[in-house]
Length: 110
Image (cartoon, rainbow, N blue to C red; front, side, top):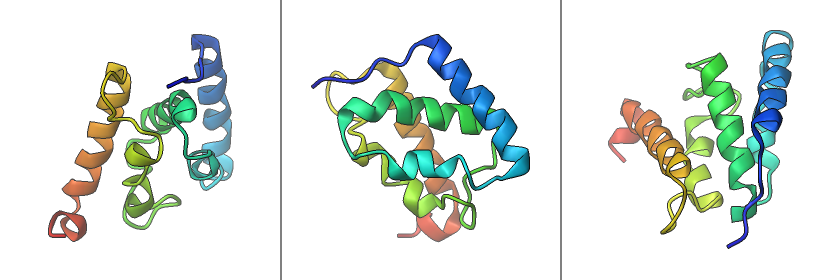
């Protein structure tokens, strides 16, 4: 499967954009993950967006947040983060997403 290449510079730009957007309009960054096409080639961008958001605001994803945990829980399968031979960063993000979702009592009993 072909994947996009997100350089360190691109990640820095994405994070800088989020630094400026979060205080002004907290809902603005979540559409990046929501609107990306469900393809493996966008996994780099999805992982970078997730890492940037969590790095800036660890509590960004909650049950009632701008991108709910229910929506977030679909990301690992949407971007095929756990397919065999995925990079370790993909597996790390998928595990972090599942950990966040299952930490909520509402979802851990489902």
